Image (cartoon, rainbow, N blue to C red; front, side, top):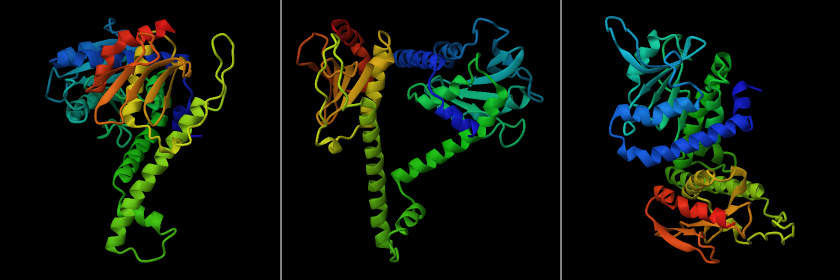
Length: 370
């Protein structure tokens, strides 16, 4: 199996879980502080240096993490790269940083110049929330125009965390990363093209799919119709796949063991479950609440169930231990909390998902009650 597939399929071990927890804590820090961060220097101190520290490098050791490292470029003397990371005395990573409000994609010219004169094989362009990793897959010693790997602190994905783990001080291995970099680059490109096709199917993909069951000519009007059919078919297929995987993960047909050992009846499957659509917004809200709860309990104890009426977050996958519920299926969005120990929760209107962090104390109190 190709190394990149092994990397992507590798289950989380203790180190990876620890890395994930630290990144989620950094995410909370970013959300809480970024509106107060007004300069590039503040972005580096508040967001980038903690990120480097999470990777295991000693930010207080100037021989391991070198700030403002001079990179003379041709006739330009005194050019400085924000950070150079060394391992065993050799440079392995260079960081070029921007203010968090700037795009991490728009300023790779400086990093490109620094990379050319550096012995490091990897360059990182970041605005403190998005980290783009570059190398020289296309031409030796010339940084590629596009990153082979990106991790977004505000949209953490398990696969991205697994890949980032290979850049930590304890697990860094140049040959392994280079072996997987090309695959990561093209997987990222293919995924981006696939997402475009889901959103707006091209003539080519429509013709490819329709030609397998429709033997009449595709006129202009038919092409318009089949494009819409294709878009809906892809959306339904993806939603049903997600729903099936969620049901499997929740083990909704298994008996739940109560704290005192007494068995309760199995959870019955909602006959209208096919009408349930779990949205990206609900999953994002769940990740925020999960990060808050992980300050007190292991992630394995935090579960969720989606219904037609609400999206519920549960302790120990037990519907008798609701932590909170999201009511996102109406024009106004609400968070329902249970910190007062009542059978019925208290609903609070949400104007943005960031407001979930304001309910940290209530969510923690709910855990204490159980």
